[in-house]
Length: 269
Image (cartoon, rainbow, N blue to C red; front, side, top):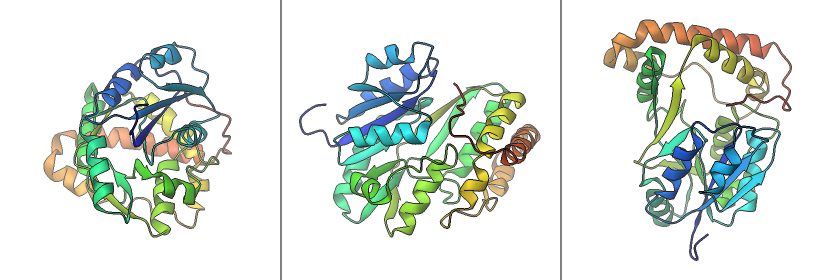
């Protein structure tokens, strides 16, 4: 960590070998210096070795990403903390813009990074169109950059949640009275090749925590986004494929919600 560095970037990993190099390179290519902490959860694919070439520290923690993120920000020293997933790529100006916004507005507590995506195949293209329709939609987006003081006040990520944890933290931050802004530079989610089977499996895993999240007093209403209308107007070509994808995901969420949440379970990759 360079003297005067004010931002800690935390990246949780688990068998992230396909994407982690590009992710961490994008953090190192930011236009201001950062402290980079990778928190790995027992990867077996060489992820820690790749991360060691970029990170200031590679820590070991689990059982899931909420605990990993908490371990990372608490170990860091930056007054500003950004959380980036291991399959994401930051545009170069994200952190510089965040620092400028926090400096200009002492009442600002957190920042959203607009998220877009890329990948291979029809369903990845449909997902990319869907993500574009969500930009600026407060019912979908969640902050990824926080003042450390706000993380201290809220306790950070809820370790009883291994899904919906990003919404939960953003919800609690907003409920505390913290104001949320946004940077203009974007983060790109590498979806890889999406299949209906994989989409179902991932949402079934996430669905285990849906009843827990919805039981939170600060939980946001689900299913009220206006993105579907914007998507129909701007990218009607993707609607059939996206309908199939969303049906698989909805089925997975419903199936997962019927299973007990087990934080020791981990979705790899």
